Image 1 (cartoon, one colour):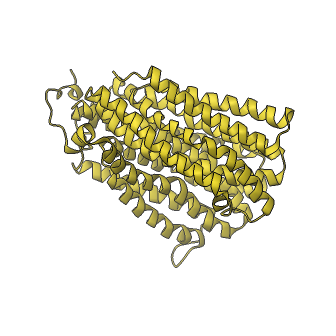
Image 2: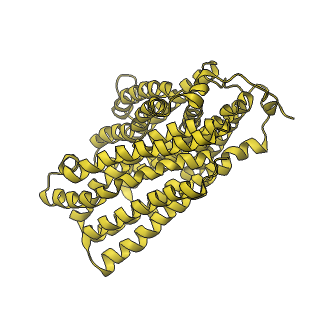
Image 3: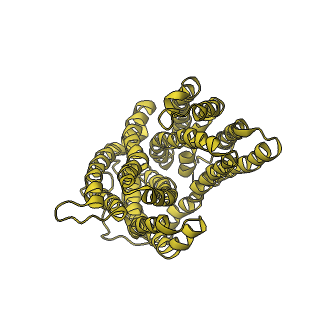
Length: 459
């Protein structure tokens, strides 16, 4: 018997873990989800927008170079925070729910090793293969040079993104979500101060251009990771982070990787579906592409909103499964789904009734506004089904990553085949693309809901 399995007899359950196991479901869920929303907005929206704002002053080539790198940066963040991060949070929550505090501490240490390995893979892949990748995407000259400057800094610092993702997920697994909002807000304040300083230079600081934007982002993420590591090591959570007396075991690596590794395909499938839709919209011409590009950004906003609730479901449901409270675990998933569907329905209503509120943020061209409004009127009807992706967190808790992959693979198939039929055969234009987008969302959400209803393994 190893050190990680000794302390299993009637351990004292931490106060926060007790809240996850016995607290009223809705208030506890909202209490955890609210700070997670702040984290996701900063992580996905604010950081990228700040970089783009200041890099825009360097000219179109620099801005285009940043745009070229952005999808790959987003993919890495989604893998670190939602895919592998979700697996880390679920494993920690389950173990704490079962009262195995020392094993949870060991899992946290294993998670940091996994994050370090994943960061090394990303760094090697993009530092060595980045130039050829960006050339394959058709860029040359100043745009390619700018993309490589930004990419090399970002992916050389991949360790910052992966360690922050792992540490954030460990904290989520303990249920201490409030600290995350404060750490991320402080780090973003640092980021906002550093970007103009390093991009344009001031006093002793040289003007680094687009390299400075990447460096500012890496520094702020490292600061966040350091703050969370100190917090976890302070003993203020159910886990006191320390590598002392930790034995690295294959089964603990497997506990995380058997869910996290396959779930890392989920953002690839989701981004592939959006890329296919963008390609079909591009066939229709610049106006349709611009309208689609502006309208589809609303869908991008839905996922971090949904993941905020999903993070709460993951912590609560994982703890309940660990404590063998299977009825409570199922109730948490369905209540979370209902709350998320309500939030998505509100967004849907705004998209259908007032599309100009969204489209007006991106364009004042009357034709683009009209096309975007028509797209949102159709796709908005399907937005409540995006709530189904909350069950990705539930399936991470039950160690069933295959169902999210089936759901997203089904959406990709609908989008690729349906888009081709709509654009090439029926020639229904942007309306056809909107219908296909809606069908894809309904398919994805429907598969997840049906799979959880009939195939979830809670026990």
